[in-house]
Image (cartoon, rainbow, N blue to C red; front, side, top):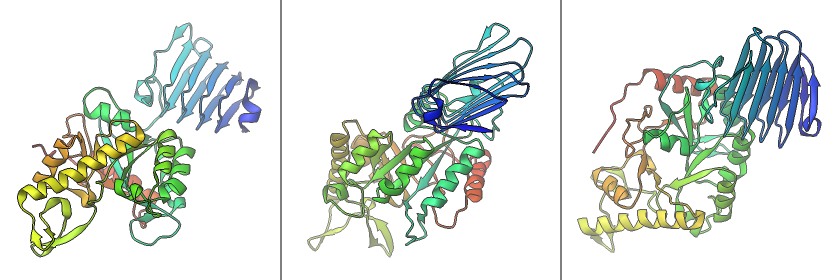
Length: 377
């Protein structure tokens, strides 16, 4: 099987039984595969255009094509299989016996006739949580870059479809579908390793991550967390960002147990806050985080992930009044178009000891077998 990279692919005509195009950038591929049983595969192509003419039994597969267009012409009665997985702004035109195929919406292989993808669940999204990606495994919530890449590879091979944040928001608002086996990748805390290690891997697989950052750490120039310039660069590379508070990612002892500071009154200058003072403190933090992140990125930030997993009824109301429309928890379960956007379920697959096989199984168990009740207020 021949493999053509960018310098070999631009404007080329390939006459072979099977063609695989890997990591093509800004390429126009014309593949003429006239042998029976021929196939053409474009893996991780960016801005690629595949034009395929086949004699018989053609199989064309585009995996994670970025702004890809596929045109296929097959001889009458020869059979045709076309599959597009996670294509962004992709179109497929399949011509067999003079019939032109319908437009395929981005990242939705369910619309493609003859797709060979395995379907585990439909009309659901399983939102995944990660924490730090680092070769230095300093806690159980750290995954090595190698292990993270292995997970993404497993997701791709098992026909999971990493959707974008925008697709997720449209879906939860009832404004658009998602492909079968849809997953969304989210990352909490905003460690600097997200720029150093996570970003290159996400770009390699041409998938997007949603990063929830403790906004105050960027203002304070904390060397362990993302800087503003790194956040801007990641956003320019296609990543998206939400708030993880401004400076309220901490716990205190209240009533004999550790409690997030945004869920309780605290002692300030030797005096316990009043309810009004509590409300004002938390609101100032939530609003400041949203305003600062929106200012730097030039977008309206409306997504928030709770540190430690949950807000209580009071902090939930504060977050909503601060302008956050989508609140991510760590409550396990899937998301549907009927789910409460103020209580978004996620599952954690970002721990050190979770293998790719275990991560896949957790997604399957969640997407197929977890009929969780959705909290509404």
